[in-house]
Length: 519
Image (cartoon, rainbow, N blue to C red):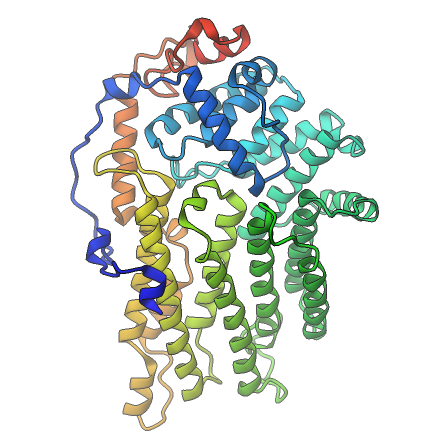
């Protein structure tokens, strides 16, 4: 199994990573500030990046860009969207992506925030930027919700939410809803109920007319079911097991509408498989004795039997395995097209797996621990396979700006460390040593359980990785020798070399030239 997933090279040493959580030694910066300032994008390269985006958009189909559109014409007619496309399409050129990202955020601040400009072009540009947000550039500076609020306000000001009969307006609103709902669930924030009701009504009306079940409609219906499951989990009820059955039936209905030979099948299948995991986990969360839906003083009810908990956990693990089996069956070269949706669903599934693999409760017995050991062993193989893929996909070199795959590589390395520690500190040894006496409160077990459930990006352990070292060096590189020509309080705020980002200046339309050549 391990060789089948990882290939011939299963050596951790060959991947150039380590499970250790110590701060890595400083490495020399291989790119100079002068080289950063000299980075340019030619018209030919812009056309290539635009072509690359055409392959990405199947994962977030809410912004239509015709296949025959050229960089020159797009820079003239849809400049902000075009700048967003260039920014998110340079995944394999991380230093250039960072420079484009600085330019994009500068235009956003000056044109949208300061001058209050609004248009469909701005809305679509924000959608694209958020859908493939380069979080690895500023990993702990989460402005996603701030940008979403700007987008939501712009849609309302332009009255696009009242023009849902128009395809561009409808897709913009659905795209905003999908991102808002996804991030709210991922960060456990309260979603916008009014927006949810409005989009649900629009989807229900569309579904009756949409005989071919468009990609946008199916993704939106899947996300709405995601949100419904999330709300049911928050509210808590003894009817949750019955609700879970209803959710499974709705999922089957969605699966029946997928054309598995279509290019967009992968994004839909990932979404639905991730939804299956959450739905399978739902009854287990409400039945466990320490569930947030039960009072801490409420006695342990007889109907909550360990055997039933174990059955639910096994069912959830089966769905988790189904998700990873499919995710890892996708050719690695397709990962560069994934949107924020696919990465979020991967993260949420890993998080759910940690709940199954590490949480400890009074009712757990030897059967439970045996199940968890097998589950951790299986998850370790999946995570090692993912780690191997991320290290292969990463184009970052020592001392250069990191890319998104190097970020995931470091995150997975930290997560894998918790699985390795848990394997060493198995409670089964304590049970056998104490002749059946429970020892679930031992420091090693509790510590492993706690740390394994927290994302390295959230608990700060990402700062102890090579990725973080590369981010810090990249910050130094891009700030060094800043000679930005902008005046006033924004002078020098967006890095060095921002006055000559694009080659062939005479070929670019005048409006776009204004954006890429500040004085």
